[in-house]
Length: 238
Ligand code: ATP
Image (cartoon, rainbow, N blue to C red; front, side, top):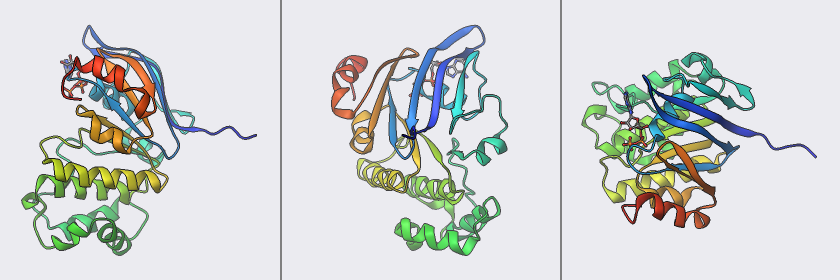
């Protein structure tokens, strides 16, 4: 029998800022093609975890494996070649270029030609097609997030990291974005989504991970982690 590999393994990761340790031996995995939600209250260490995975922050100890290969300390281009894609803060789009111009630029970083990327993008994000002549900086927050996701998908990633997808966006837009996340998972791309507001993410995730004060307190299918989640938020916004 062949063993099914994980797209991403985080193994006993310890990390912090200066002398303050923020992550205390954090371990979890993202199975190939799964949408996994990393949840927890403000300051739990979720973004720090993503920063360790994407190479922005060097862990004090522990390992990150992508498709079974050790990648700690790898440069951004090596991580991209290994299939990791992350949407940077500010979403990594060019505000003074139109939607179509942004999409043409995605082609430079990808092996697929820009016409194909444009076609794929407009099929998956019809709203971007409607806005194709608009400057990216004039799009709504949700549309900018869609453009950023289109950029990420243009590189055919194996693993997509999404940080606070819902930040500052209206509930209806967040719902639309999570439908897209579900669709991305169905295409076989593994997704690790970090969220402070848990329910929307759990509606599309196969696996939820609860993090509190730099430690994992629960891992399981969404229905099985609600108690831990409520405890983590002390009856708060989950
Ligand atoms: P949030 O949803 O608020 O972003 P989070 O779960 O993503 O929360 P982190 O941003 O990873 O949490 O922060 C974890 C801890 O590390 C917090 O106590 C935070 O104050 C601290 N921290 C984060 N970034 C830095 C930094 N650059 N320098 C010092 N401390 C930091």
